[in-house]
Length: 214
Image 1 (spheres, rainbow, N blue to C red):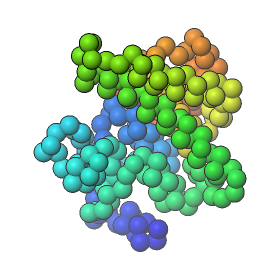
Image 2: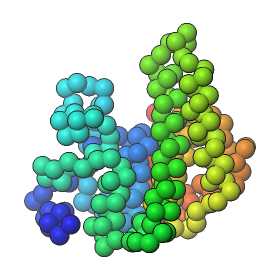
Image 3: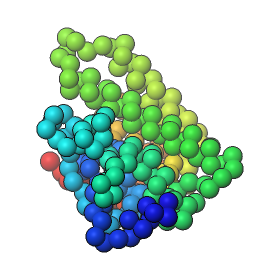
Image 4: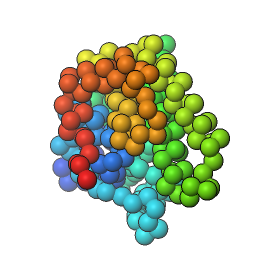
C-alpha cells in the first residue's frame, strides 16, 4: 500500500476512473471519492462496455465499469476500489479495520450490491430482448431478490448521518432503482425511502453524483 500511496500522491501519475455518470457502481465509487476528499485527484473518463474498440476491454478483460487506473495499473470492481480508497486514507473510514463488525459491514454491502445487480439484469432483459423473448420467470426471480433485500434493509437501516461502505452502496442501489424503475419500492418500504432522503440531505456526495437530466 505504501507504493500505491506514493503513486497516488505523485502528480505526474494519472489517476483515471473509467465509468459513466449513469453507472450505479461507478456512482458508488464517485460518492466514496467525494466522501473521502479524494475526488480532486480523479479524472472521469467515460467508457462504452459494448464497443469492441473501447480500450476498457484491455484495462479490464471483463469489459466492465468502473475501472480505476493508477498510472498503467488497473483496479476493479467497485468493491475492490472502495477497499483501496479506504486503505489510502488510513483505513477505518469506510470499513472497520478488523473484528466481526468488519465482516458484518462487508456482508451488508454485498446485500446492497445485490439489489443493483438484480436491477441491472432486469434492465438488460428489457434492453436486449424483444417483448416476445423476455422471460417473466427470470424477471420475477430478480425482482424477488430486490424485494427481499429491500425488506432486510427496511428492518435494519444503517445510520444515514454516516457515509460509509454500506450507506454509500445502498444509496447507489436505491438511486438506480429510482431511475430505471425495475420495480416500485417506495410505498412498500417507507422507512427506507425516508432513509434515502436523509442520506441525500446529509451528504453532498449524493447531489454531486446525480446524473445530468437527459
